[in-house]
Length: 150
Image (cartoon, rainbow, N blue to C red; front, side, top):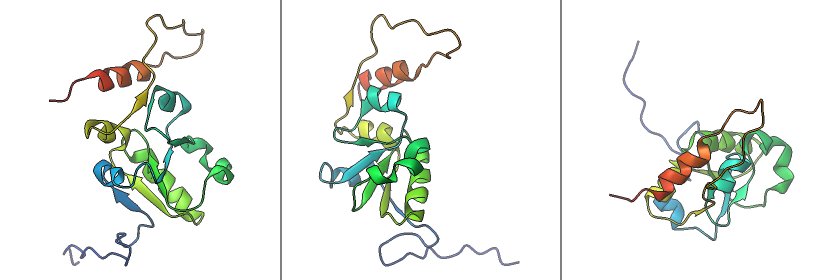
C-alpha cells in the first residue's frame, strides 16, 4: 500500500480538490468587509450577545428552511470558531451558493482587532425559568470581549 501523501491539488479558484468552498482567515475577510455579505450561523442568542456589524444571522439549524432569505453573490460564513460555518458552507454549496468559510469565527475576528458589536450581560439577569438550563455563553463572550489583548 502506498502511504505517500497526495499532492495538494486545487481548482482554478484556489479551492482544495474535493472541497466546494474556500476558507479565509479573519484578516483576509477584513479586506472585503463590510462590502461582502456575512452570514453568522450561530444561535440568535449568540448573535445578540456579540456579532460582526452588518452580519445576517441565520442559525445553522434554520439554514435549510431559510435559503430564500439569502442574497445572491458570494456568502461569507462565520460562527464561533469555524466548525458550524464549515457545515453551513457544505450545505449552501450543495444548493448552488458560492461560499467562503471564515476560519476561527468571531473569536479570531475579535482577537485580530476587528470590530464587534456586543450586548453586555445585564448586571441583574432575569432568573432562569424552571426547566431551562442556564447559559453561560453570554458571560463567557462578555469576558472574552472585555479581556485586554497582550
